Image 1: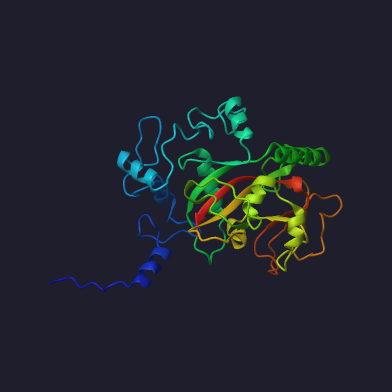
Image 2: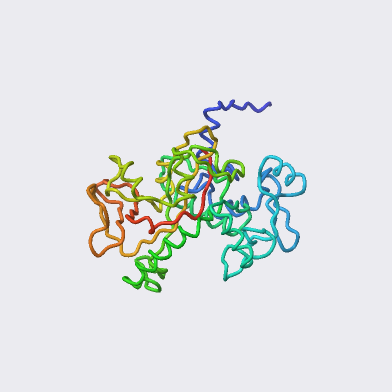
Length: 340
C-alpha cells in the first residue's frame, strides 16, 4: 500500500521553521535560542559556515570556518571572510596571535598602524574569539519573545580617533576617582571594572551601506548618524534635537543591555538586507534607578553618574535602558550587522 502524505503549504513550512530548531528539525526551540538544547547548538556551530552541511575543516591546530577549499573559495567570492591563522589572531595583520598588552593586536606596530588610520573598521573573522563573544552577547540579549531573532552576518572592530579615546579615558578616570568601583562586587556578584564600565547596545540611523558585505567606507552624509558616531563620537546635543516621546529620561544618550530593544531604533535610510547596531563601552559609575518616566532630566541626579531605567511590574518600561549625559561617558567599540 502506498503511503499518502499531505502536502505542506509555504505558510505551514514557515511555521514549522519558526517553531522547530533549524539544526535537527525534530525538537522545539528552547526560547529565545534557535536550538532545542546545548547538543544541537554545539553540533550546529561546528558546521561549515558556507554550506551548513559538512563539519568545519580542522588541520590539527586551527578549526577553519569552512569544510574545504571549494566552500572557502565560494564563500570568499560571495563576500565572506577567508581563513585566519587562529581564533585569537591580531585584528590588524591577522597573522600573529593577539598580545595581552595590546588586547586586539599582536604588537605595538599593528596597534599604531590601526590607530594612525582611525577612524576605521576592522572586520573580525567569523571563527575569531571576539566574533563569538559579541555574537553570543547579541543572541543572548535578544529578549523580545514576539520577534524572531535574526542572524549575525558581520562584526567589525571600531577604531576611533585618539581624541575620542582620550575623552573617554579621562571621563572614566574621573568617575573612578569619585566612586572607586574597580574590584568592588556588583549586584550580580561580578567584580566591577574602572568606572563601572559596561557594554551596551545602541541603535541609530544609517544612510549608507557601511558594514554590508565587508564595506568599511565611512560616509559623510549629514543624515547618517552611524558614520557620524564612528567618526566623531556620541554627542548629547544631537539627542537634545532628537528627543521624542520615547525619551523617557530626558536629553541623554540611550543604550540598553537588550539587543532586541536597541533594534527598535535601528533604521536604514538606504536599501539594504542588513541592519546595523553598535556595541559600546559605557561608563555607568553610580547609576540612579528609575522605573517610571522623568522626561525633564538634563543629567543624572546629584551624586550619580547615569540613569538606569529598570523593568517594572507596572509596565512603564518593558526592557532596561541606560542613559548617560556626557559625551565622554560612551565610546563605540563594535559594529554588528544582522539580517533585516
